[in-house]
Image 1 (cartoon, rainbow over the protein chains, first blue to last red):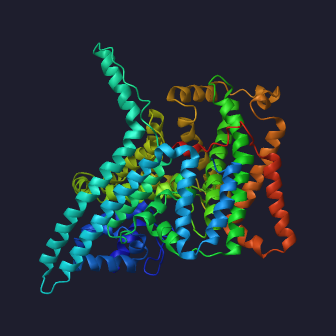
Image 2 (image 1 turned 45 degrees about the vertical axis):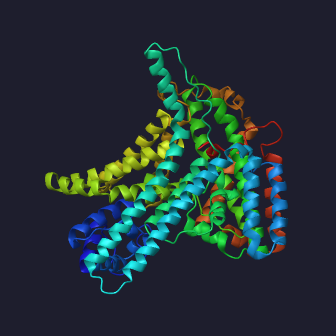
Image 3 (image 1 turned 135 degrees about the horizontal axis):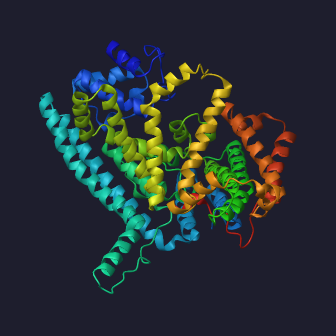
Length: 75
Length: 529
């Protein structure tokens, strides 16, 4: 989870990603940020994010992203 | 039958009566019959087989994919499977499902590409024939452009991709799916719907709700006002000015500003009318506009303008391209050979350019639309890639980016960028665009304003004053809509105020609206796409 927050903070400074909710829905990060985020997550956790996971709810908070990553690692 | 015609209002009244007479569980069938009638009455009888074709191909292929996933789930539920075996099963079924997906995409996107680009292939064939000395000429007249084809193809293709990516289950009833595809409020100009939203809306119990019907009618009135009073009046001026290329740059500048408001009020007016119509039947359509002229950047602008198209390209073109194997490989290579920033630049540029060139081609097939796509890709890439430099400049110049003045500057800048994009397509060809730019730079002469020739180009002085007043109303309503729901607020007012507002809207449309027999301006710009 800390790593996810670190990646997000690198992407956008000045946001408390540990508590921020609705980061996609509220346009805190945009589609170009998501593309960069995916690349960083795949590299860090050695997982592959498929189109099945490209849903706003999977990227809307650090916790949601972490949950998705855990699911991918179990797969 | 267009949505601004009296036959459409008559059609709505009849459909409304029949719809609410029918039992709740059969009301969707009334909507299906009404939608088929509307499509045929809009002069699209000959196109009906095409929409049936696309809808059926997508439905049957999505059904096959869904059934494969059901079989996969049964297999995965078997006991004693380890992770490797489960992965193998998933891959095996995914491979089979992909065949059906590709079949649907080839048959439907291929068809869309054919009706959009077919005439160019015929032109090339004729050029080759002429070059080779053969006297043979091919005709492109037989290539029809079915009404609403870009909209229903995208709505249905989005559905099959979602089923393939397991975002939701497939639709078992073809007629339910056909209603989603041909649903009359969205068939002509969108919004480009998503099955998990509109499909579910059409499945719910469509019960009578007086408040919702009144709210829907108010939205329709607002849409008619935007279209008939503003857009069609501005069209008189813009079509006259852009009919030629030898005018004062000042006249072109006025026409460019008016053209931006014309296309906005035309398209968003249409969307308001159809969303209002749909609300009368208890079905919520997606929002397509969110006051785009308040945007501070170009990317934000495209999140507020034609939102369903932008969302479609983001979900079904941009993201698949971004996370494709090719892009991942490229990302790895560029990270090794370039700086982090350079690598990020490359991985941003390719999906953005692909998405925007395709968005341009969706709007039109000529070189002007390719240029339009390249123009927006370049703007978006610049805004992303040089973001640190822009921040640094703001810091050095000590610009308060949070101030109201800076926000207004950003909005004006974004509006100018939008006019730049329109300038590529509105004059009709890149050559004409060049001529307009030449006049804007070297012939910016305000004489037409001084000698009042400006008021002889389709709009009189009174029309200019009326437009100024309407734009103030548009701005005020948009400002209110940014903060709260105007219709909800209106519903809270007493009956006298409510009726004053409604009557004012009705009479302003009747008195100031541009309509009537033989008047063609009420054709909507986005229907051609």
